[in-house]
Every structure is written in structure tokens, then in C-alpha cells.
Amino acid sequence: MLKILGKAASINVHKVIWTCDELNLPFEREDWGAGFRATDDPAFLRLNPNAMVPVLIDDELVLWESNTICRYLCAKTGRDDLLPSHPRARAEVEKWMDWQMGDLNNSWRYAFMSLVRNSPSHQDPAQLAAGIAGWNRMMGVLEQQLQQTGSHVCGEQFTLADIVLGLSVKRWLKAPMQRPGYPAIAAYGARLAGKTAAFNG
Image (cartoon, rainbow, N blue to C red; front, top):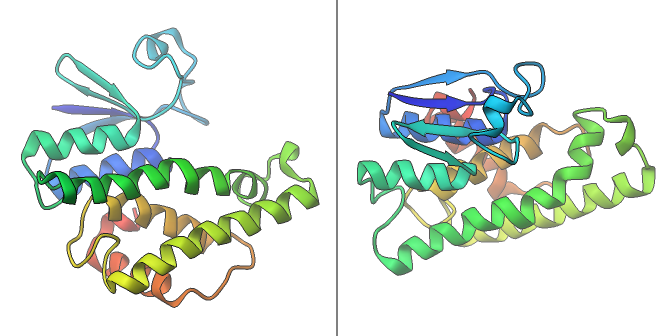
């Protein structure tokens, strides 16, 4: 039985849960992170020295980094529809997954901490305005891609890129801030919400 360490409210833990749902993989989950068991606990640090969730335990294998975990699970189950085996198609999926983890995540960090987490150290008006603008600008990149594909991030097929970016879309749409009216993103979010309960979980 797979074991996932991390609270379900974490966007990165949610990626792994959704991937398991798509793959029909049973798992057990333990709550770790803010509000639960602290990730600086020595027992957790032995599994992930970065003190971050999620961690996946599969027999003797211990993995961290949410996108890597999702890739592993697809490869383990042979799901080429979610993570293609053909190098060019796979690279396209992984390109957008890496963009989500790097460029997009970094763009929303300050605004999310300020507006959603109400962090006292993230309340500078100028930095907040810059954070919102940067977040909206990055979402504009996704809007352009979805306008081109007309369906999912990499085309007609639902892939791992849609799991990681779908949750990012959900976070952006729920943030209490001004945002552009991106019609392709709005339609995409509605499409994913209608596809599976895992999007809304």
C-alpha cells in the first residue's frame, strides 16, 4: 500500500492524491505540515531533509518533490495517456509541469502568502501589487496556450500537466484579488471541475 505523508490541503499533496485517483491506486495518507505533525520532526527529516510535503513511501522507495512523485506513479502503472512514453510528447507534458513548479509557483508566492495566508511579513503594498501583476502575467501564458489547444494544456488529451496546472488554476481563481477575464482558463477550470471530484477535493 502506498503511503502519502502530507496534509490534504497542500496543493502539492493534492497533486499526488489526484494522480492516485486517476490511476485507481489505493493509498494511506498521514497528516504532516502546518497544523499537524511538524515536518522538522527528525522522523520526517530522515525521509525528506527539505522538511516539505509530500513524501511518498512505496515499500522501500521514498520519494519527495510532488511532480516527480506523479511521474513515478504514472510510469509505475504504465499510463502513457497521462505521461507519454514517446520522447517528444513526454517532453511537452514535462515542460508544462516544470513551468508550473518553477515560473508559475514563484510568481504567486508573495500574493498568496499575503492574501490567502494573511502572513504578517507579506503585507507590503508595493510587493503585493507586484506579486499580483506577476501572477496574472504568468497565467496569461497559460491562457495563450489553452487558446491554442482549445482543450487541455498539451492538446485534446488529459495529461499530468493538467493535474498540476489545474490545481494552480483553482488557486488563482479562488484568490481574493483582481484578475484578468481569461476565458480559456475559465472554461478549462470548469472542464476539470466537471471531470472529476479530485479537482475540487
